Length: 515
Image (cartoon, rainbow, N blue to C red; front, side):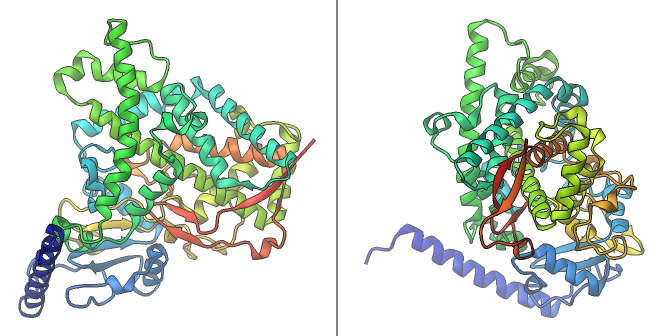
């Protein structure tokens, strides 16, 4: 009888797994690890043989880890399969990881899914601190997301928000409910594509986009990256990718890389036509390509076409998903708390006038709007478990030893709901920020949705501007009402976990223009 090659490979992988589990069982039973026997590890739940503490997690690990921290403390040690994992869940412990010992914890543990398309070798969030990493950070900080660069193209953001309002107005006139997350995603996508490529991607036909649904692709990437993976807990299984997560991620990554490859290829051909490797910088892709073609980079090879493709992948995936998710959570909280919505609209009426679009120059004069967004970031951090870090050496943290090679995770969701820091931590109370200098820019560890230290998200300045513009304009231009049968007190607040935190049930609401 003919046996398919994949069946043979699966059978071989199964035998390898059985053999490996047997070896690990004997190792656990007869030879306790010697590396950590004299080290005072942080407290934590007792691990089971082989699997460790995997059964202590569920499909919402940010919440299950927060519950464990109430028992074992703000710094705890778990064994996730073969991986020693240290989780911190308080602002004081987050400061130790993100600031005090930032250099020791500056590199990442790499989820197996992020090895797809060699993304871990090129993606800015994942590559180790190195000359290439510093070069990318410098380009982001000094050219892409600097205050000067963002001020220069603020009119573009205003135009994209104006188009968002026009689309909502059309739906309002037709009596259609607005899917807030989708509307925010489209606006974020248009902003990024126009900023980087001078092309409005959302309005292009599917054939021009390679036939891919970018929103679906981006969420698939975020979901796969955050999905529990046996290959992460038992590294020996990475050779077989038992759950197929890396294979799925390869498909999603390749779609976006092919898209960026086509856009970059067109721009490089144009440079050949004008017979110049350097080009007047009309968009951010021109900036990146000019850096790639300059003499210093050609000598040091710090920035390549492949690196640019992976940088764009990170910026577009994270930039669209986190911004749209934060806006959707902000609108959800306002619709669930009509009093806060009324206060925000009253402030907008007074400062810029009812029905007018918010401009970036207005944001500093809208403290209640700023407080609403800080409170939304606090309750619903876009990345609830900040991207994992790795201890480069043994390091003592508050009397405990974090061993070399350990995975270190900051539970930003738990930190920002710590009852020792926040009064009524699970309630939406924007007023708590009105007389507070706490912000989300990595200087205050009570709320760190973008991380902190040298690994802080480089797109933070753009994301903050966009959320203020979109939310302020939407609630000042329209009154909002939930769909029939949905009352504020019954509005679903369930979330679903990926690398980012999405609403489990997307928010839809009816808009009525304010005049």
